[in-house]
Image (cartoon, rainbow, N blue to C red):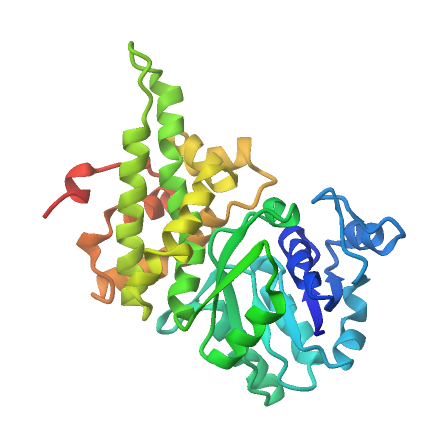
Length: 352
């Protein structure tokens, strides 16, 4: 039996309580300042999670972030970080002021950060910041692959990748979270898994565009849709994702597995990134689509383009990334960062 703390009581952090609870582990679910309603409901006798619409296991104790330090004092076996990517600086502050020993950290938060070298994955950023502030060398791992929170909460079969640099820590985290419905595979390619996890949202913007093109242009006289186009864009997305992963220090085979093709597939089925892609496909500039249709939504793929677009363009200009082999990447950056039309250039995609 292990003691697990999950920081972040949103849908994914809370869904992780289901596999975590299977082996009778003790779990503390810590809400951020944005999770007060959730914490109040879970902490009541009903244990009901209002956003997942399920009853969390009895072994789950919910509390506010103001009690995070006290929870950490009890020496957890694993800290699961499930805040939003925008909340990472806040979470780093909370961890640095509360951690007393090198507790293994498993990140389910996805995202990338611009650095002097180009692009930095969040587990490296977190580990560096914690060591710089506390002197503790903390093993930071990450979960990747196709995992919809609602399906996990319903205990539907879910396959994921647990990645990290320390194989013993990866194996230990996988054992702690193992459940009949939660199937974790191990990987040493932390960089590749994290690049895929972030860019699957980015490329879903393009794969979602044919839905908008179809709305704009209408069905063909014979009722034909645009599945061929969406499939071609899916394939091009994987090809360019592989280029980015390899250039940034990951393994191409990661793109072909759960972390890459698997996660891209499930992200393209539904969600905010696909909805934004549909609006771009209809011909709306990004700023108009965001302001008039998705003003209250966080569109992770678009945010990645805004955060890293200039850095990626600079890396292409310096030859760190191959400019000519990333036409879809450049088109998405131009559409999001410069309100340009999303140009789908098949002559560029299919050059030999």
